[in-house]
Image (tube, rainbow, N blue to C red; front, side):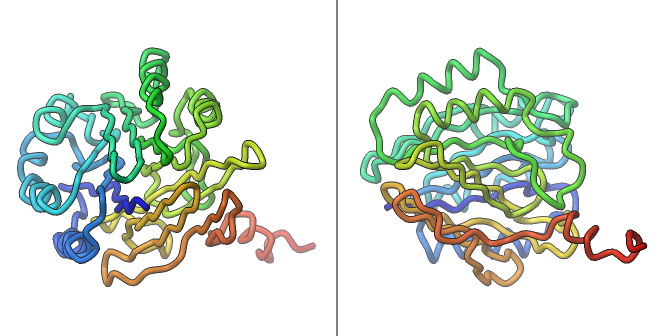
Length: 273
Protein backbone atom coordinates (compact mmCIF):
# COMPACT_ATOMS: atom_id res chain seq x y z
CA UNK A 1 0.00 0.00 0.00
CA UNK A 2 1.17 3.51 -0.82
CA UNK A 3 0.10 6.50 1.30
CA UNK A 4 -0.02 9.94 -0.27
CA UNK A 5 -0.71 13.36 1.19
CA UNK A 6 -2.17 15.49 -1.60
CA UNK A 7 -1.94 19.25 -1.05
CA UNK A 8 -2.69 22.05 -3.47
CA UNK A 9 -3.26 25.76 -4.03
CA UNK A 10 -1.20 27.01 -1.10
CA UNK A 11 -1.16 30.59 -2.44
CA UNK A 12 1.74 31.85 -0.37
CA UNK A 13 1.43 35.62 -0.68
CA UNK A 14 -2.38 35.88 -0.70
CA UNK A 15 -4.62 34.83 2.20
CA UNK A 16 -1.99 32.25 3.18
CA UNK A 17 -2.38 31.14 6.82
CA UNK A 18 0.82 29.88 8.50
CA UNK A 19 -1.17 27.88 11.07
CA UNK A 20 -2.65 25.75 8.26
CA UNK A 21 0.71 24.74 6.83
CA UNK A 22 2.00 24.03 10.35
CA UNK A 23 -1.00 21.73 10.88
CA UNK A 24 -0.26 19.93 7.63
CA UNK A 25 3.41 19.50 8.52
CA UNK A 26 2.40 18.04 11.89
CA UNK A 27 -0.03 15.67 10.15
CA UNK A 28 2.75 14.54 7.79
CA UNK A 29 5.05 14.05 10.78
CA UNK A 30 2.45 11.87 12.49
CA UNK A 31 1.43 9.84 9.42
CA UNK A 32 4.81 9.56 7.70
CA UNK A 33 3.34 9.07 4.22
CA UNK A 34 5.34 7.62 1.36
CA UNK A 35 5.08 10.87 -0.61
CA UNK A 36 3.60 14.36 -0.48
CA UNK A 37 2.29 15.59 -3.83
CA UNK A 38 1.51 19.27 -4.38
CA UNK A 39 -0.63 20.05 -7.43
CA UNK A 40 0.39 23.65 -7.92
CA UNK A 41 -0.15 27.28 -6.98
CA UNK A 42 2.45 27.13 -4.25
CA UNK A 43 2.78 30.92 -4.49
CA UNK A 44 0.36 33.57 -5.67
CA UNK A 45 2.27 35.79 -8.08
CA UNK A 46 5.26 33.76 -9.24
CA UNK A 47 7.66 36.19 -7.54
CA UNK A 48 11.07 34.90 -6.51
CA UNK A 49 10.66 36.43 -3.05
CA UNK A 50 7.48 34.39 -2.52
CA UNK A 51 9.19 31.13 -3.51
CA UNK A 52 12.17 31.94 -1.26
CA UNK A 53 9.99 32.72 1.76
CA UNK A 54 8.08 29.45 1.31
CA UNK A 55 11.25 27.34 1.31
CA UNK A 56 11.45 26.86 5.12
CA UNK A 57 8.06 25.12 5.03
CA UNK A 58 9.03 23.06 1.99
CA UNK A 59 12.27 21.96 3.60
CA UNK A 60 10.38 20.70 6.65
CA UNK A 61 8.14 18.60 4.41
CA UNK A 62 11.11 17.20 2.48
CA UNK A 63 12.72 16.11 5.73
CA UNK A 64 9.67 13.99 6.51
CA UNK A 65 8.71 12.50 3.14
CA UNK A 66 9.37 12.17 -0.55
CA UNK A 67 8.02 15.22 -2.32
CA UNK A 68 6.75 16.04 -5.80
CA UNK A 69 5.24 19.30 -7.07
CA UNK A 70 3.83 20.49 -10.38
CA UNK A 71 3.41 24.19 -11.18
CA UNK A 72 0.06 25.96 -11.19
CA UNK A 73 -1.01 28.99 -13.18
CA UNK A 74 -0.14 31.31 -10.26
CA UNK A 75 3.35 29.80 -10.00
CA UNK A 76 3.81 30.57 -13.70
CA UNK A 77 2.84 34.23 -13.44
CA UNK A 78 5.56 36.80 -14.14
CA UNK A 79 7.81 34.13 -15.66
CA UNK A 80 7.66 32.32 -12.31
CA UNK A 81 8.43 28.92 -13.85
CA UNK A 82 12.07 30.03 -13.82
CA UNK A 83 11.99 30.29 -10.02
CA UNK A 84 9.78 27.20 -9.64
CA UNK A 85 12.43 25.10 -11.37
CA UNK A 86 15.25 26.78 -9.51
CA UNK A 87 13.78 26.52 -5.99
CA UNK A 88 10.98 23.91 -6.00
CA UNK A 89 11.70 21.30 -8.65
CA UNK A 90 11.33 20.47 -12.36
CA UNK A 91 8.13 21.47 -14.11
CA UNK A 92 7.55 17.82 -15.00
CA UNK A 93 8.97 14.73 -13.34
CA UNK A 94 8.59 11.03 -12.60
CA UNK A 95 8.84 9.48 -9.15
CA UNK A 96 9.18 5.71 -8.73
CA UNK A 97 8.57 4.11 -5.34
CA UNK A 98 9.91 0.63 -6.04
CA UNK A 99 9.07 -0.81 -2.63
CA UNK A 100 5.48 0.44 -3.02
CA UNK A 101 5.12 -0.71 -6.64
CA UNK A 102 4.11 2.85 -7.50
CA UNK A 103 4.78 5.31 -10.32
CA UNK A 104 3.78 8.99 -10.07
CA UNK A 105 4.17 11.25 -13.10
CA UNK A 106 3.83 15.01 -12.70
CA UNK A 107 3.14 17.19 -15.74
CA UNK A 108 2.97 20.93 -16.32
CA UNK A 109 -0.39 22.33 -17.44
CA UNK A 110 0.45 25.98 -16.64
CA UNK A 111 1.49 28.76 -19.01
CA UNK A 112 2.64 32.27 -18.07
CA UNK A 113 -0.27 34.73 -17.81
CA UNK A 114 -2.87 32.12 -18.81
CA UNK A 115 -5.57 30.91 -16.42
CA UNK A 116 -6.48 27.89 -18.54
CA UNK A 117 -4.34 24.82 -18.84
CA UNK A 118 -2.81 22.93 -21.75
CA UNK A 119 -0.57 19.88 -22.05
CA UNK A 120 0.45 19.86 -25.73
CA UNK A 121 1.54 17.03 -28.02
CA UNK A 122 5.21 17.01 -26.97
CA UNK A 123 4.39 16.66 -23.29
CA UNK A 124 1.60 14.18 -24.02
CA UNK A 125 4.14 12.02 -25.85
CA UNK A 126 6.57 12.36 -22.94
CA UNK A 127 3.81 11.43 -20.47
CA UNK A 128 2.93 8.24 -22.34
CA UNK A 129 6.57 7.15 -22.45
CA UNK A 130 6.85 7.34 -18.65
CA UNK A 131 4.49 4.38 -18.23
CA UNK A 132 6.83 1.88 -19.87
CA UNK A 133 7.69 0.48 -16.43
CA UNK A 134 5.26 -2.19 -15.23
CA UNK A 135 4.28 -0.93 -11.78
CA UNK A 136 0.95 -1.72 -10.10
CA UNK A 137 -0.07 1.76 -8.86
CA UNK A 138 -0.08 4.38 -11.63
CA UNK A 139 -0.70 8.04 -10.81
CA UNK A 140 -0.70 11.32 -12.77
CA UNK A 141 -0.47 14.75 -11.09
CA UNK A 142 -1.24 18.10 -12.72
CA UNK A 143 -2.69 21.44 -11.65
CA UNK A 144 -5.68 22.16 -13.89
CA UNK A 145 -8.85 20.10 -13.75
CA UNK A 146 -9.68 17.67 -16.53
CA UNK A 147 -13.39 17.45 -15.70
CA UNK A 148 -15.50 20.46 -14.56
CA UNK A 149 -16.47 20.48 -10.89
CA UNK A 150 -19.94 21.43 -9.58
CA UNK A 151 -20.25 24.65 -7.54
CA UNK A 152 -16.73 25.81 -8.40
CA UNK A 153 -17.37 28.87 -10.55
CA UNK A 154 -17.03 29.26 -14.30
CA UNK A 155 -15.51 26.35 -16.21
CA UNK A 156 -13.26 28.15 -18.72
CA UNK A 157 -10.02 26.95 -17.16
CA UNK A 158 -10.11 23.22 -17.74
CA UNK A 159 -7.23 21.70 -19.69
CA UNK A 160 -7.73 22.57 -23.36
CA UNK A 161 -6.63 19.13 -24.55
CA UNK A 162 -8.22 17.26 -21.65
CA UNK A 163 -9.66 14.62 -23.98
CA UNK A 164 -6.20 13.35 -24.82
CA UNK A 165 -5.28 12.97 -21.14
CA UNK A 166 -8.54 11.15 -20.44
CA UNK A 167 -7.77 8.78 -23.31
CA UNK A 168 -4.27 8.24 -21.97
CA UNK A 169 -5.60 7.25 -18.54
CA UNK A 170 -7.57 4.51 -20.26
CA UNK A 171 -4.74 3.39 -22.53
CA UNK A 172 -2.25 3.03 -19.64
CA UNK A 173 -4.76 1.94 -16.96
CA UNK A 174 -3.99 4.86 -14.67
CA UNK A 175 -5.40 4.37 -11.16
CA UNK A 176 -5.46 7.96 -9.95
CA UNK A 177 -5.22 11.52 -11.29
CA UNK A 178 -4.43 14.26 -8.75
CA UNK A 179 -5.48 17.86 -9.48
CA UNK A 180 -6.17 21.22 -7.84
CA UNK A 181 -6.91 24.68 -9.27
CA UNK A 182 -10.58 25.21 -8.31
CA UNK A 183 -10.05 25.07 -4.52
CA UNK A 184 -12.62 22.32 -4.17
CA UNK A 185 -12.25 18.81 -2.72
CA UNK A 186 -14.08 16.52 -5.12
CA UNK A 187 -13.76 13.21 -6.94
CA UNK A 188 -15.03 11.34 -9.97
CA UNK A 189 -14.56 7.65 -10.72
CA UNK A 190 -14.72 6.54 -14.36
CA UNK A 191 -14.80 2.83 -15.19
CA UNK A 192 -13.32 2.26 -18.63
CA UNK A 193 -13.69 -1.51 -18.38
CA UNK A 194 -15.26 -3.92 -15.94
CA UNK A 195 -11.89 -4.65 -14.32
CA UNK A 196 -10.41 -1.13 -14.47
CA UNK A 197 -11.33 2.37 -13.31
CA UNK A 198 -9.62 5.72 -12.83
CA UNK A 199 -10.32 8.09 -9.94
CA UNK A 200 -10.01 11.81 -10.66
CA UNK A 201 -9.24 13.51 -7.36
CA UNK A 202 -9.27 17.24 -6.65
CA UNK A 203 -7.85 18.97 -3.58
CA UNK A 204 -9.18 22.10 -1.95
CA UNK A 205 -6.93 25.03 -1.14
CA UNK A 206 -4.76 23.58 1.60
CA UNK A 207 -3.24 26.62 3.30
CA UNK A 208 -5.28 29.68 2.32
CA UNK A 209 -8.68 31.21 2.97
CA UNK A 210 -9.42 31.38 -0.76
CA UNK A 211 -12.26 28.90 -0.31
CA UNK A 212 -15.59 28.63 -2.11
CA UNK A 213 -18.97 28.97 -0.39
CA UNK A 214 -18.84 27.17 2.98
CA UNK A 215 -15.89 24.93 2.09
CA UNK A 216 -12.92 24.69 4.45
CA UNK A 217 -9.22 24.72 3.61
CA UNK A 218 -8.30 21.08 3.13
CA UNK A 219 -5.96 18.43 1.77
CA UNK A 220 -6.35 14.75 0.89
CA UNK A 221 -4.98 11.65 2.60
CA UNK A 222 -4.81 8.89 -0.02
CA UNK A 223 -4.27 5.15 0.46
CA UNK A 224 -3.86 3.10 -2.73
CA UNK A 225 -3.30 -0.65 -2.81
CA UNK A 226 -3.52 -2.67 -6.05
CA UNK A 227 -6.66 -0.87 -7.23
CA UNK A 228 -8.22 -0.45 -3.80
CA UNK A 229 -8.46 3.26 -2.95
CA UNK A 230 -9.47 5.20 0.15
CA UNK A 231 -9.35 9.00 0.33
CA UNK A 232 -10.04 11.21 3.32
CA UNK A 233 -10.48 14.97 3.03
CA UNK A 234 -8.64 16.53 5.97
CA UNK A 235 -9.62 19.97 7.27
CA UNK A 236 -6.48 22.11 7.47
CA UNK A 237 -7.82 24.18 10.36
CA UNK A 238 -8.41 21.31 12.82
CA UNK A 239 -7.26 18.11 11.01
CA UNK A 240 -10.72 16.55 11.16
CA UNK A 241 -11.13 13.80 8.52
CA UNK A 242 -14.12 13.03 6.28
CA UNK A 243 -14.29 10.10 3.87
CA UNK A 244 -14.24 11.45 0.31
CA UNK A 245 -14.09 8.31 -1.84
CA UNK A 246 -13.70 4.56 -1.34
CA UNK A 247 -13.03 2.09 -4.13
CA UNK A 248 -12.49 -1.65 -3.74
CA UNK A 249 -11.50 -4.02 -6.53
CA UNK A 250 -12.31 -1.25 -9.01
CA UNK A 251 -15.84 -0.95 -7.65
CA UNK A 252 -16.67 2.38 -6.03
CA UNK A 253 -18.28 1.92 -2.63
CA UNK A 254 -18.68 5.58 -1.68
CA UNK A 255 -18.26 9.09 -3.10
CA UNK A 256 -18.94 12.06 -0.86
CA UNK A 257 -21.64 14.15 -2.57
CA UNK A 258 -21.11 17.83 -3.30
CA UNK A 259 -23.82 20.48 -3.57
CA UNK A 260 -24.52 21.65 -7.12
CA UNK A 261 -26.13 24.73 -8.66
CA UNK A 262 -28.87 22.46 -9.99
CA UNK A 263 -29.97 21.63 -6.44
CA UNK A 264 -30.14 25.32 -5.56
CA UNK A 265 -32.08 26.11 -8.72
CA UNK A 266 -34.61 23.35 -8.12
CA UNK A 267 -35.13 24.53 -4.55
CA UNK A 268 -35.57 28.17 -5.52
CA UNK A 269 -38.99 29.78 -5.31
CA UNK A 270 -38.06 32.13 -8.16
CA UNK A 271 -38.97 29.50 -10.70
CA UNK A 272 -42.35 28.57 -9.16
CA UNK A 273 -45.37 29.55 -11.17
